[in-house]
Length: 242
Image (cartoon, rainbow, N blue to C red; front, side, top):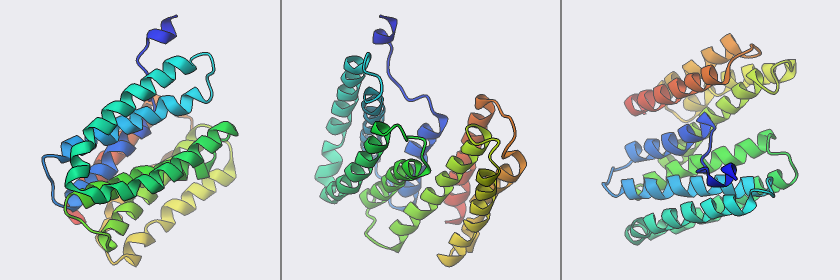
């Protein structure tokens, strides 16, 4: 009975960073509005709704409890997004990729393959598109800048997915460790290709972190703190040099 009284909240440190950092990136890249706060509330609660929804697919005994919280969070999110949608109806277009990517997450959960790297990619792309939506809401357009917002956030947080795998589930897998090294080196090319070489700077911390700690035994709390530091330095340095 105790489980049926608990508030359902995501416990992954990375999820909280991914729901906020790309969104803030988009706000800073565009024109901040006071009503961005409403848009963020909507974005946050839609994220919160997705967690119990996906968990309900795996936990039959707690399904009613989980779906109740999914409905509550979803209702709050949909209510908060009404005003932003009136101001910027183009936000409706983001619902298409969001729902498509969420359906892929659901597919992975049903197949019990939610740890697959492609599932991580789909989830991270949803968060990266949240940055595009906040940029669009701040008088941004469907332009090159929106593309870079999505790409920078996508490649940064995919790096965290690789790193986390190499210190937990794939800690003793040399192939994953090598893949993580290669990935973190290759992403330094992205800012150069996009014509923004200074954007290499926020990717140096994850590069150093990967070469120092991949494959080593680490406590979840230490990894979480490291990821929070990485996310903070990413948004601060990006704000300065972007």
